[in-house]
Length: 202
Image 1 (cartoon, rainbow, N blue to C red):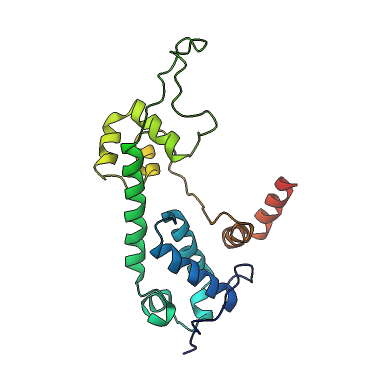
Image 2 (cartoon, rainbow, N blue to C red):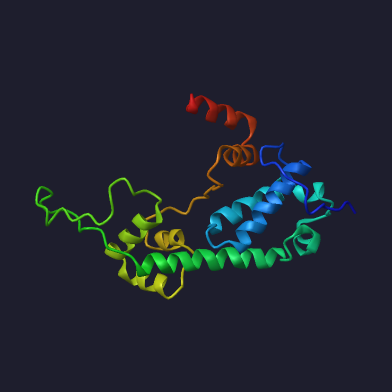
């Protein structure tokens, strides 16, 4: 089995699936597992990239579970444990949002009046933003908000779907830097779709 030098440096900008890329993703997964500042979505994105491009093979492992369980992989956690960690983090974040929620102002009213125009969430913070979704849940579905506080929902999005505020569609997330975005696009879209993305950006 090919081994990993613990001081070997990786490169996120390297070709997905290559050894330097796999080492960089391995280190990002390890950091995300042990750093509370990393979100569950970030951890999940890196895990999915490693699995999709079979980066573990470039590191000398025959499958993802073997890679996770091996001390040489600097993880020491199996795939089930990683999934549990992701869910625990998402559930914790949902509970925290619920506890801090301030309901949106009710529909209607005289919006020229400061009392009626009581927006607790800035208009720019809308869409899929968890703060906005939680504020809508607090206003429209206080029963679901109570469930969030009890930890009954795996994430804010799951609670929003249950409340009929968000649609149950697949989401894609990655680290907020150019190389991670490129890796995510390359792993999720085919050549035709990438051409469409390029056209849309230009």
